[in-house]
Image 1 (cartoon, rainbow, N blue to C red):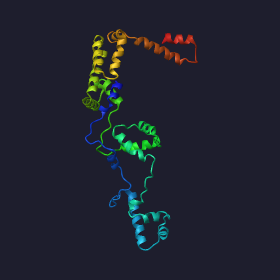
Image 2 (image 1 turned 120 degrees about the horizontal axis):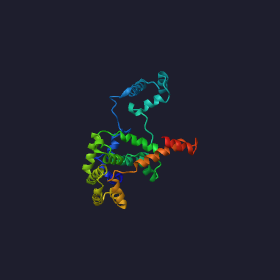
Image 3 (image 1 turned 60 degrees about the vertical axis):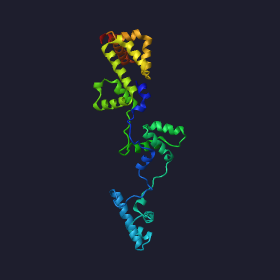
Image 4 (image 1 turned 180 degrees about the vertical axis):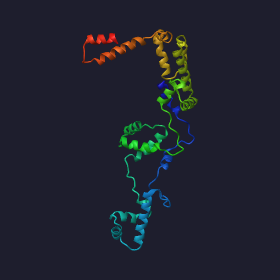
Length: 285
């Protein structure tokens, strides 16, 4: 079933009216070269920087030299010139250093918007293009994209999640999982058909309805669903045994349990005793 879901992974994404593009995601991040409004500093650090910038420019306007201002305020010789050169207090902020990942960020943003959120896979794709980037660089950038602004589509469920929803009993699913599964099946008729085959096979398995197995195999083969069709056709190789297993109450479960118990006792005695003690323990337990 996981193979079938993986073949229809495109159906797992929720349609979004305005999918974000690389431009919109880039616009959502702050641009260090974009002028900012300094009327409302945010946080104590911003207030201190604004006050320091104002003080330095007031002292410069009074005719004091930069060295004198630094000596008067007790600041370093590099601090005062930095405030003096800045026309606005925001210009004193440290600019981010260029990264080797910068040329590849638009590509990562497009792939992330398309639903590929695996850092390992994205890193492998960049390495395939001989990009001089590390796994840590990709992981850090993807972490910023995960905190996307409101208006971006929710991440789609994984193939393993949908497979679990389909193969578990409906009563074992939460209300949220049932709603998500219903949305997925509404978008993908093939997975809806596969869900029907799974329910029918579950009834055969739990109700001991092995006589109806050939009908189920024919229906699964006619659907031509990847993974599920192969599973159905493989049962034809030993149909009598499979039918008996889905019909009779007998099974090898008791024998397998006894063998497992003997193996457990044997492993407990490794290096401690011989065959005679092993024989007595098996007989007594």
